[in-house]
Every structure is written in C-alpha cells, then in structure tokens.
Amino acid sequence: MKHTLPAILAIASVLVIGCNKQKQAIEDQKEATKEAIERQKDAAEDAAQKAKEQVEANAKIDKANIEANKEAAQAQADAEKQKAEAQAEAAKAAVDAQPK
Image 1: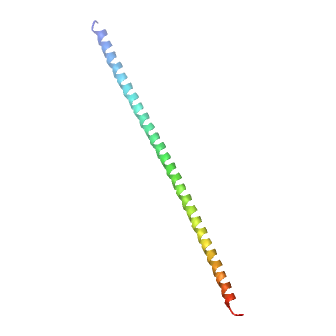
Image 2: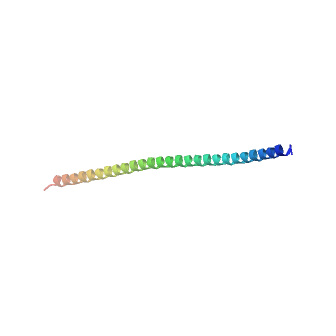
Image 3: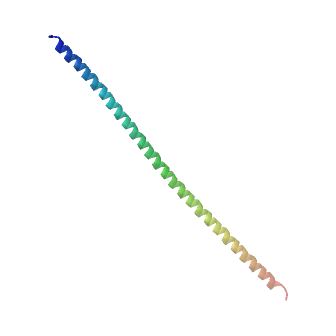
C-alpha cells in the first residue's frame, strides 16, 4: 500500500502532463491557423488596394486619351473649316478676276 499511492500520483501526473501537452499543441495549432488566416486577409487587402490603384491609373490614362482625341478632332475640324474658307475666298477672287 505504501507504493500504491505514489504510483497512482505518478500515473495521474503523467496523464495530466500528457493532457496539457495535447492542449498546448491544440492551442499552438489554433494560433498558427489564426495567423495564417490573418496573413491571407492582409494579402487580399493589399491585392485589392493595388488593383484599385491600377484601375484609377488606367482611368486617368483613358481620360487623357479621350481628351487628346477630342483636341485632335477639334483641330482637324478647325483646319477643315479654314481650308473651306480659303477655298471660298479663292473662288470669290477668281470670280472677281474674270472680265465682266
């Protein structure tokens, strides 16, 4: 009987220590999983921010291209208008130059 109580206490201690190690392993796994999920969230946030910045940059480029095309079209129209006016003036001058 002298050895029975210490043996029971030793076995109980081993079981408690074993359970604590298992619990700690579970806790460590939980923390590792949470950290991995947090890193995924951060990566998704970074990717979304970069995508938004790229979309904004593309929009600025598109807007600049539209403005440049508008200005080119207006310049072309102005040139055609001046050409038409010059042709009309030349035609009037030709009519005035004809003998009456």
